[in-house]
Image (cartoon, rainbow, N blue to C red; front, side):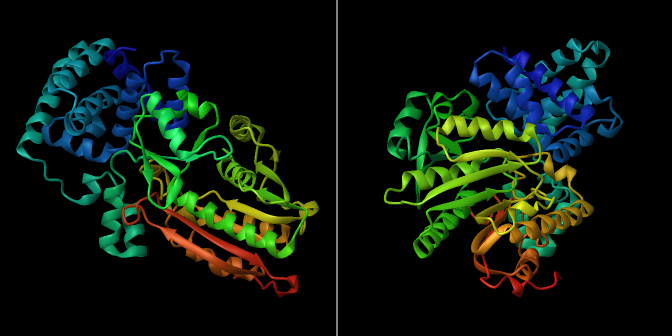
Length: 451
């Protein structure tokens, strides 16, 4: 791909995203993986444009509407996306010359057989340039950071305006990647040197000795030799914190009960990161005589593909992929598990900075239905646990309903809370995330009627 080709590919992805209604991440990955060209700079350029235009759609359209006699919502979709691509480069990509942003957009119009509109594209983008140079003043923070009003109101209701604004600001731009070292194969120092040999600079992370931090868009794990060799996994600090807390409780459980083996069920496991974390941790710690088995479950064979890929990549046994619907009760699992990982489907509002289209897809009704689904899964999880067993509940969101709002329900299932933590993006240096760890009461009859 040449840069002009990269813009054409970006336009094609954006058009398909609008037309097909698919999630952006998988669509982007499918298109890039179909291209055999290994130039990581061009792949990064496509990714930056596609994700950037989607993430900043509201602010782009507002800026375009200030200088165009024809508003964005009445433009042809292809013209609107061509202008958005150009405007994104002008407003948010400092290293792209203005002339390239404008001229390549005009070229896109011609490539799409829109010669009659090439002058219009040129004029609008010249207007955006002048607007930028004069200093843009957006009408509100929601428009500036492309935050739908519903999401803004939800955050403000839960955390107040000041924290809500900090969280909204944090969603703009690309978040760093955090690489969790596979200690069964390498060390953080050694991995740092290996990555440097691949042309990637990685920094250490305070309080996380087995984690490295990489600047956004400088590493494509799917094409990283060290990733494919299973030397690391990509996992945010908030998620890692939950797993380290669970690992600590598992060690205490083993010490207290001295089991020969422990059974772990990961209920909604794809792509398998949490299953792999526990497997790596239990294998890397010397002196543990307890064996383990992990059932890494998800709803379909298609979901298990990523789990199998990660199991194979990290090269650790003890994990078995299983097709299982976490919302459907399986009586054969009653009181069979020592540990259950319930990282459940959620609204995803804690990872807006990484999954840039989530904020446009979620509604209040969605959150209500997700809470019902979570409770059904949690009810099953509680029944699958042995007395004294451990449950991790986690979600990559920050809504009160899906986080602390589930506390009373989980407690009603005969479990006692051991630990919990809520991470807020823009407040904490990580993704928005919630986890709580629970221990099942020894007397199962103490289970209460669900609220």
